[in-house]
Structures are given as structure tokens and as C-alpha cells.
Amino acid sequence: MFADFEKYIKTQTAVLTDDEISMIARAATVTNVRKKQLLLQAGDVCRYKIFILEGFLRTYGVDADGEEHVMQFSPALTWTTEGESYANCIPSNYNIEAIEDSRLMLWTKDTFTGLMSNIPSLKQYSENLVAQNLHTSRNRLYKAISATAEEKYEDFVKTYPGILLRVPLRMVASYLGVSLKTLSRIRQAQLQR
Image (cartoon, rainbow, N blue to C red; front, side, top):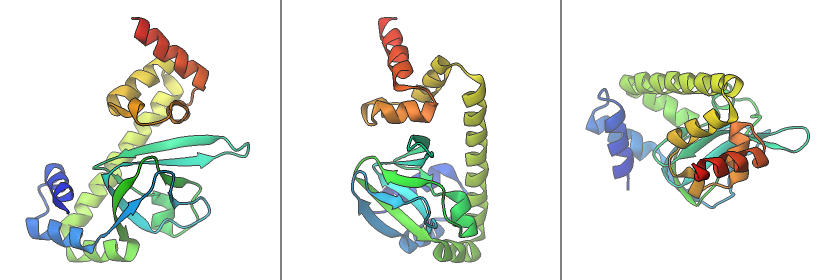
């Protein structure tokens, strides 16, 4: 059941032993969620670190006008959480939702903190993940304020290959910060090339 998780971890870091990886996997709760099921609702405290074994999640916020803004897509074999809420035990401003039926591994904060105490190399790995996510977020923010809509779209396609077949275009437009009409125009122009 944990073979995909163990294989993924081994490709990401050499600091964890097979026994440590197995201990981490066994500490998780494995759960299945349905498409459109919320794992976190804005206003609630994020209680889990999540690893996606199968499926697809998104993290999004909703503005005062009721418009959704996708902050992150989380495909299979990636981690996600709502970091500020999780770390500080405060209500989240964001929702985490399954875009597809998904199979997940969940660790509570207490469980994951205990694992990091018992497996110091997990703390190093976790800190590396946080640093990598910070770098990715900064790059995304820079592109959001400096790139053209076409450049954002091209970067998105490279970053998330195949996602356009799995996600409604309105979510992609929201992630890119462009209108659905603009996204459709960009896609049409690329098809004509």
C-alpha cells in the first residue's frame, strides 16, 4: 500500500533509511476522498500534513465577491497542507478540496512532530520541503506580477503537464489570474500555431 510513497521518498532524499521511511508510512492514516470533498474549509484549523497517493487536490481562497482564487494544485505524489494554519493552529483563510477521487496519507501535527523527534533526518527533509515550497511560491508570485498571460500559461503547461485534461478551465484561469475568456483566447492561438 505504501510502495508509491516509499519510492517517492527515496527519490527525494537519501537521508532517510528504509526503516525510517517505513515508520513514517505506518504512522499515517490512509483515507479516500471523493471529488469535491473538502479536506479543509476556510475558518477551520488545518490539522494534517497530506501526501497524495492518487488523485488531485487544490488549495483555494474565496474573495468577498465569492470569486475563487486557486493558490495551488497538488497532483499525485506531492505533499500539501495549509502551512500557516497547520504551524500556528489558527483558522485557515483557504480551502483544500479534492478535484478528483483521491487516496491520501494524513499525519496529525502531534504525530508528525513525534516522528521528527524520533527521526532527526525527517526534520531535515521537512525543512527542505518547506524551503522548496517557499522558492516555488516566490517564483509563482514573481511570474504573476511580471509575466504576460501567455507566458504564465506556457509556464503552467510545463509545470503541470496533462492537467488541462483533468481540471476545469475556470480553475486554470483562476490559478493564472486571468479571465476564462483570456485563457480561451491564449489556448486557441496556440492551437492555430
